[in-house]
Amino acid sequence: MNFTAPVSQFMSSRLVSLAPGDPVSMAIDLFRQHHIHHILVVRHKQLLGIISTFDINLRTGYDESFLHEKVENVMTSGIATLASTDRLNVAIQLFSENLFHAIPVVDNDEVVGILTTLDIMKALSVEDNARIMEK
Image 1 (cartoon, rainbow, N blue to C red):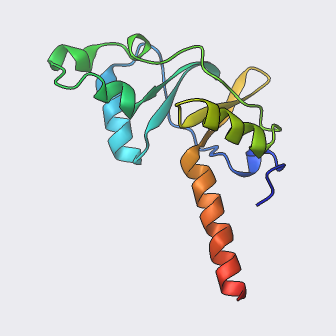
Image 2 (cartoon, rainbow, N blue to C red):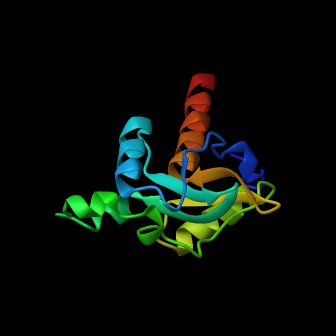
């Protein structure tokens, strides 16, 4: 794997996003529908934060009112971001120094993708499988 390749080669550009005023119930529905763990919270393509299944699970035993709470009250803001031209090794360094598993990719103040630890593992798996097939 080329660890100096840009993150644009590994990120997902099919984005599932929410607006800050959307209810938490919508986030839960999107997590289930798309089989994902992170959703970007944006306004006019500008990143405001991220909400994860972990954020939801922190509220174990939440009541009905939590489902109507706004995403902006649950999301994490002030998060690390990458540019699409940043190298994969920079992303790996960020993941290894922190406890998060997703990094939004932002170019010119607009969200263009998201890179997750799963994206990196999939790329490594594809490379491993290719090497095995060569033998």
